[in-house]
Image 1: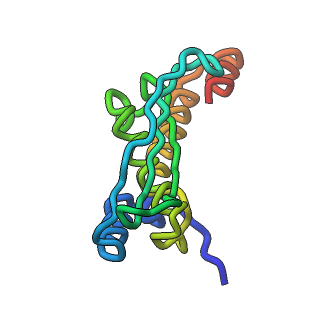
Image 2 (image 1 turned 135 degrees about the vertical axis):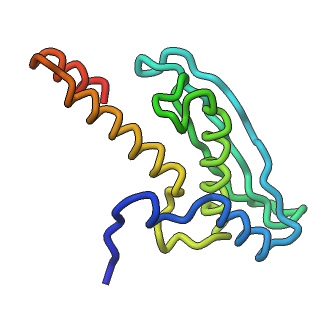
Length: 143
């Protein structure tokens, strides 16, 4: 029987994944592979972070994970922490790609789900304040 996910509490946070990774691979490491900034992609600026999860110092096929965040971040969890949020998400994805951590509760991390859920809530709040169909349509297009 599969479980339906209801929100961030149903996902594993990256801190827990790091503990699991370090327990299983005590000589492993999480390493930044690339950090770049994209200007005006789909009308937004982005930070893109790529990380590698090395299970051992001589791991020839580390797990690679990439994450990106819009700049400026649209939520209270992402504004002014865009690089840190992208880094954390990329680490989580790299550990999953290395098949080094549990994914029974999903590949996305609790932080990723929280950030997106909060973003959706922000748009819902804006939509509730809309006074015209055009204002509502604009909010919908931004979401």
